Image 1 (cartoon, rainbow, N blue to C red):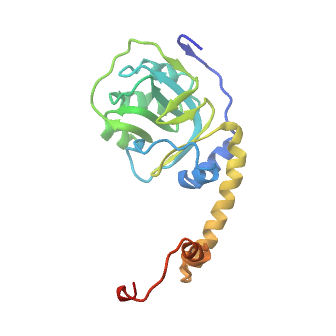
Image 2 (image 1 turned 90 degrees about the horizontal axis):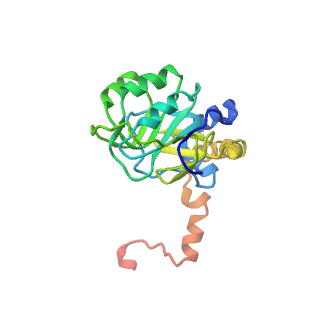
Image 3 (image 1 turned 90 degrees about the vertical axis):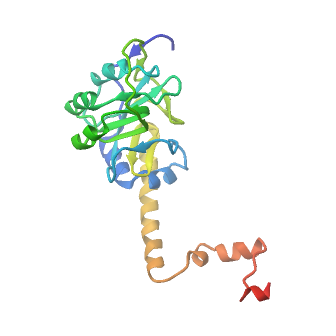
Length: 231
């Protein structure tokens, strides 16, 4: 695809599946998805204790230019998460409280941006969930067209419009829309297994034993000795 385009209509995942993936959280969903889809560690929340999930509306912008974020506001539907990527690395503050006001009016669940945000105190006060790779007051322009609702790479993760975005204190996770039901099934199973494991740990069992790690370490040549004098 060449040129600038704004795609108005996309397919979205089942809202119940989206909500359940959000409740499972980034860490569990990442494991359930085969440890794929996780954005890099530079993508961090500007707030604490907030988790969201929604369908991705994507933006491809030129660095230091937020014109296409304005264009994307029009096509956002309630519950969507805006995912913004730039065509080359940028830390400029491309998003602030005015754009957040527009997105909140549209029912947007939050923002994930591989660039900078500004007006952070206002964003936190407004309660607009935001994940970014930088906080930077550097201003931007509105000069170069990009695209809305096209595939992008955001902080190392492939994002297709309509994919499920799960974001919390652990970072941001992308689940391909077509795989979302299966990943949710795996996540539910992991949650049950982890709760059973948690109960065993509460009773004093050692993960070293019930994971079979003691035998594995011995097979790899590890010895248990009483004191350093036994070495």
